[in-house]
Length: 237
Figure 1 (cartoon, one colour):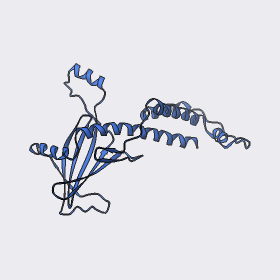
Figure 2 (figure 1 turned 90 degrees about the horizontal axis):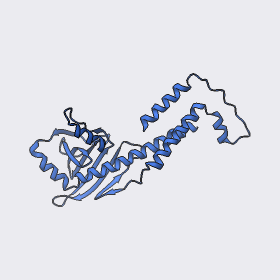
Figure 3 (figure 1 turned 180 degrees about the vertical axis):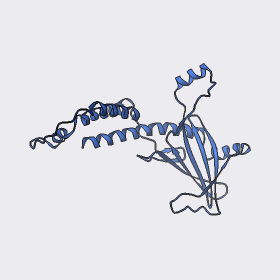
Figure 4 (figure 1 turned 135 degrees about the vertical axis):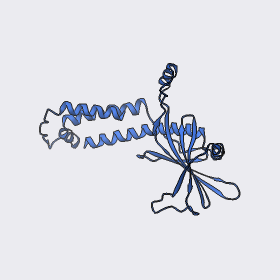
């Protein structure tokens, strides 16, 4: 939708570039809103109509809903205006210690592509089902002075682990920017099942991936609506 809006704005700009707008004239007796309307150029007026049409479409025909604040044992921290979301949970780990689990999820950052030799049936099926979207997760499990991290791929119906992250050094201290000092290593095939079970015990699984896809789809609508209203407010002034 954003690309369509920019294309329309570009078309309006080229359409009106040859015509110089007349100098605005203030009328003291008018209300401030009416006076501001007189100050706006024809391009601004057309852009406002386009923005309001898009806002109406998103808000009325595809309205976002209030995002949930929790999922299973996780608290969900929405980040308005940012391109990611955070989940946190605490659980009792093996022994007497507690674990803190933190998940940072991006918005949609990729789409599955069909192989070049895909059959016609598979191509038609993919077209009917729509794009298979992807988002990335960084999962951090902290226990006492140990921290494990996992880079995961979340698809609509499954979650796969791509890399394991382990802290350098003995402590779990962060640097002065608040970022942990990790070493990344690829996951060997023999380790995948053990890691999958480890994460499933902490509710990091296909059900979480499905929840995040629904959450992120709704968040993208909210961010689009917020952006459109910000641009509308700027043009109005």
